[in-house]
Length: 250
Ligand code: FPP
Image (spheres, rainbow, N blue to C red):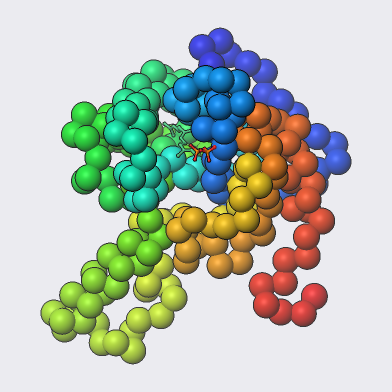
């Protein structure tokens, strides 16, 4: 999202529209290392990371991918130095404020997943405003995982379901995958088809533990601030070569 209107970038000819993932999830790793390599403070990496995310969102939208989910802040990230956590909270708030008009222009619908009640109140206000303002947009669904933890999400779903059983609204036999998924933060969102993780780490770090059950995983050594359209193109090429069997025989 930039201030000036930019012509949509066409889908590269070696990608098949009908075989694109509908939903892409990203673990944006390597911001700190990117900054360190340049002798800059870690926060510079996060700042550049926002630009990368904006470009990826636009690219997904241009190429007809209907949902993008980004892991912005995990429940474990509170353990980072205070100044870095404070910087990230302020950055999220500022980005939301600055990009709202552009999201409207591009018909982006934004939603947040995670334990939002623990975030600074001013950030919660900005989140509420962005979600309410964009809720009827018809374009890409952009989900931001903030103070998100997959295990914590599953536990809160279990608690909510247990309460329903306790109240006699359902019996344990009613609990199936559909009912369980309805109690997750992502209740109204399809599961990601493709998970991209940058900076070479081979783990999912408590991200969308339930929802990633059948996602294809693509890991690149590129650090997040350097993850550009060419890299995304490569990830999609790799995805289109995968044989998704969902446990069956092809
Ligand atoms: C991981 O890199 C990155 C983060 C914890 C923050 C990512 C957040 C953004 C890019 C901002 C997104 C903004 C909005 C509004 C959605 P790292 O710091 O762990 O890198 P390292 O592994 O090299 O230290």
